[in-house]
Amino acid sequence: MTDEESQALYDRALSVMPGGVNSSVRATQPYPFFVERGDGATVIDADGTRYLDYVMGYGPLLYGHDLPESVHAAIQSYTSEGPMYGAPTPIEVEHAEFVARHVPSVEMIRFVNSGTEATVSAVRLARGYTGRDKIVVMQGGYHGAQESTLVEGDPMHVEPSTPGIPSSFAQHTLPVPFNDPEAITTVFETHGEDIAAVLTEPILANNGIIRPVDGYLEHLRSLTDEYNSLLIFDEVITGFRVGGLGCAQSKFGVTPDVTTFGKIIGGGFPVGAIGGRAEIIEHFTPSGDVFQSGTFSGHPVTMAAGYESLKYAAENNVYDHVNRLGERLRKGITEIATDQSPSTVVVGLDSMFKTVFTREGSTTDDGDVCSAGCEQRESCMRYDDCPKTGADVGSAETERWERIFWQKMRDHNIFLTANQFESQFVSYAHTDEDIDRTLEAYKSAL
Ligand SMILES: *Cc1c(COP(=O)(O)O)cnc(C)c1O
Picture 1: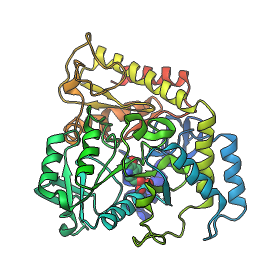
Picture 2 (picture 1 turned 180 degrees about the horizontal axis):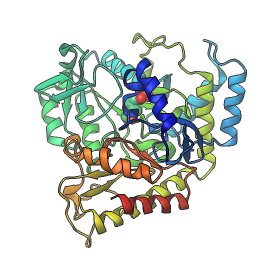
Picture 3 (picture 1 turned 120 degrees about the vertical axis):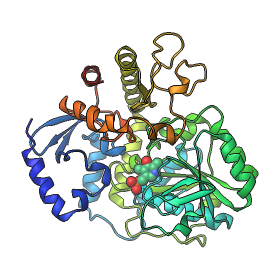
């Protein structure tokens, strides 16, 4: 395997782009490979090396790199008819109706251009709607590059997690540990009347994939109801990935007031969206007074790609396929880890998967254990190894993932997400043979 072309490109990129990339997670060690094109479940880099891809654009690509014919045709047609207008188009109505039909919390939706823009707008909406300033978020949760949620600490000592954000901004954000009902109850007892919303991913999917413990999401629902705060689910990554067309909220049976979307909902093009009860979403301008606007919002090419992608999923066995292969993969990795790597914990659900290198592993290989990834079952003998909070994943062996394991998998021509925290995805283009090959690679790399 040679890397000459990628090395040369990275050299040039370092001169004209900070860190040589346009999104920080792409700066893999020692240098990234530059992708020339995609083909089914694989990508081919600038040196002609082919990798089996589980990064899938960090989430948007439900179909891998070959789109279904109907999606492809719609994109071609909307592109060639003139890319955008600044006037409403029929396709955005189709897409909005489709989402409202399938997602329990959504009666009305506003499309924007990224997941970040969706969460920024959702926070502004919650503050405008309730007349309150404070937002509760989960430690280790991710809501994009936005000022209100890039915080660290706890409700008593909260600071921005990056330079460039005034400390005073962070004062309005209350970060609590995920899966800890007492902690958030205490925060509501102290600040409840000032809390506009709880903003959380239904599973922490940017942090090693942490599922909610039994009753946690229900607790968030009843607490926010009690204090007249909004419950916002950030389904940018789980939307139309976990729980099929009903999203994670239908799988877990908890309906938020507002949901943010991104990734899959744009069929591979830049997108975000804020959906929810009409009475709330109507507070956006021009029907309401919470300012929200965007030149590219509801872009026809994106709307066509997103709508046709979801329609194809509704008419074909897409979720059956990706979820079955996801389960096969998690089962296979669990068996390998049990045999040879007890400090490896397998996490994920549906078509998402990851392994977390916890520092201590129990060697339980019989008895009652989750066979296809942590389910947060208290009766599971590995329940205590299963990460519950962002801190649990943060204290894992992140260097082992990035510097050893990820590199070894790359040597097997398998492309995983380069850090311990980001999820991986099975696409509709993956096959049983791909799973077999991937498990062989795990067997040799773990
Ligand atoms: C990816 C992601 C975002 C940010 O979306 P961008 O399109 O990258 O701005 C926000 N929230 C969650 C849960 C995400 O996974």
